Image (cartoon, rainbow, N blue to C red; front, side, top):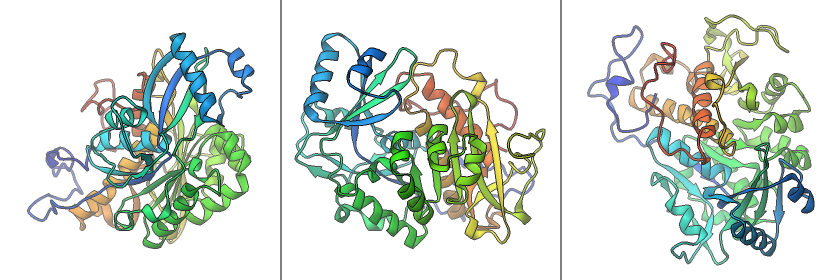
Length: 432
């Protein structure tokens, strides 16, 4: 499943299968499907470190902290002198997700945020632009006088990541810079809880305004939670914000616990459905969960063995497609779980961005649903107002596979898309 993208449609709409619609002259070749993301634009600088270093600077392992620009520069220069810098990459949770989405879909998306006005060859802003997919449209970035933000990513011997962030101009995006007409046509609007950290920053007000606009026109709002520390600090606010604006919520198990106070990831996903329509919970070595709604009359039973964990037979209707609760006559909660692809990489080179990669796959499926509905509105695929193109079971496999690809490399961003076909995959992997 690689549409949207300029590919031969016969490979993705097999008309020989029962229930499929033929593609003829009725296709709307000019349809434009894209997503929009608002981010605190950052350059990630990966630095090898020790537990003693983290303790020295009072950095709690696995968390994210704001530090001043001078301290950031001092740590950075010291790491360079000691050859501890692994690499410098364009970063930010939303930036990573937008880049990976464009690689997977071969389609455009729009990035919103603030960037240094005067960009010089070799500086951080230059590196950000050079290493971001050309399909990520940056026409609507807001120029700023201050330098670009930096995120020092400290990698401990156990591969745990701790972030120290130097703000730069990352919070200077103003609400009057929002391209309203572009946002209204998006398949999804994506933000991170990081932009909601400080209510006094311009980017907070811009995030809130953009979510209000998206909600007014029915564009799904997708929220990626930051770190468990941030969720713990702003739990009440984030729960209220999520309930009011968010359609899709992405988080890891620690963040899910802080939001729901449920230690069990499946129960956390279940409770998240009281706030949103679809929840993605990544659980590290234990894979990931997807939870959503479907209409009782549209539910599809799984062909896999039923599994009972904290919810009895939780995967019973995992072959169903995700829907918004408001679009269901009789809403039914559905769940699926998947273990790491092929047991996970033999050697994990990088954990930074694995969750963002999974979210990019999910967004690809949501935008593909819009694309297909525009191309073939009379298809039986659109006999109801679905949120996703595929079943949540199928989406979990896609998310899992993309995460595997990121875990296997040294960058949080994909260099290329996934293989057309892998012999190690069971038949029907991409088509269920």
